[in-house]
Length: 336
Ligand code: F0G
Image (cartoon, rainbow, N blue to C red):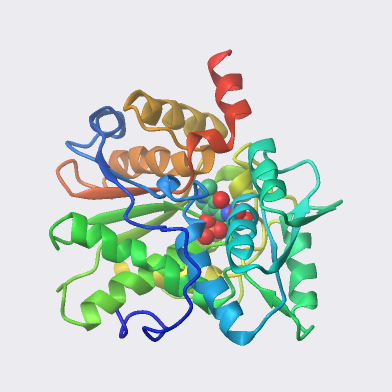
């Protein structure tokens, strides 16, 4: 572990026993996507019910080592809930910046319960993110968004878990939803490190799926799917009911695009209907995920139809959040 994570054995690790999440077989989802088999890595089984926890244990441990008093983040809800919980464990103050009216009630309730100071901005996530980057110059404040490299160190462990759960047989494809694009970056780093250590001899193709109304990386990839550009065009007014990924100016776009290009993956978008239907299909496998997570299955269906994924290849979709994160979305769907 010492070689893979940036802490010594005696570091005061702030933990809620995150990680070790299940890798499910999902036959109905596989059939829907046009695959013989599909595995779902459910990061919503973490302590605060999203993938953010594996990164937050590392970021808050580092904040503690640095003697930070206050941790802050901008969030569409999940990063905030996770940071609030780990800050509470560490006995630190936590302040979160959220776009007013655009965060699910369940996520907001978690953050309140863990004792965070909540600032709601009249604006979107990207506005919150800009403000947090300004706050970062304050010495007593520690920023826990995924521009924080320790977050990425923690989040990359999902790659190790997937490999371990597949008995170190490298999957052909790993598919993730994309918002601020920290998760896809982390996934790429995790697999690249396993290859550098000689534990695997090839990389899975990493594909990123965005919601059609919030798809800046898709536009960039469509323009040039060979090289990472110096800049990409952001989306000024991102829009999707999958509020977790309602992001127009993702901070980690460059790292994420590099992970996709280096592994030969794809970047594509799915419509609101495609995403909503895919989410309900995952439910029929007995696995509950929040809307953003289902961009994966909707994307897989399109990638199979386009011949970018073969029917018999090994595919892992990363589910990023639990179904109870956004129950209104779910009941609205089923009530027609
Ligand atoms: N899925 C869920 C459930 C999320 O909460 C997020 C991001 C993503 C996917 C996208 O991951 O940003 O690493 O590309 N949520 C952040 C938040 C932005 O504030 O909770 P990403």
